[in-house]
Image 1 (tube, rainbow, N blue to C red):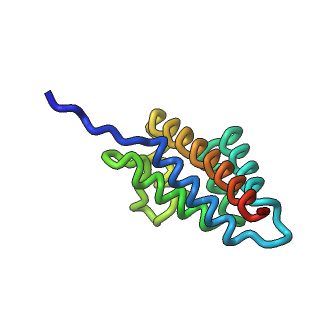
Image 2: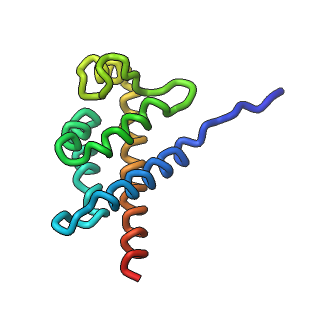
Length: 134
């Protein structure tokens, strides 16, 4: 009897969260809120309005975050990725989003993974801010 290999989705979320925080700290200027606060509003949008609204919210402000999160959903889980971007290259294309939204389990998994990744990004940003103050 062979043991199945399971993908650690929590670790994948942590890696993406770190990547998001690092990217946000590089692009932050003096007039914006703290890096940690950059993830509060997207988290609220995701919680209240859903996955599509999150990407619409991020579009004008955080294009780098969109590409990181899209890449995350197209490669996670590794065996059956949640997002297929064959129709135009981004989740904001209705055909791409429709493929995700047609399967409620996948949509809820995507929302949960994004929530966890953004939460980890907030914590990583908080630690980066703490290092910068020392």
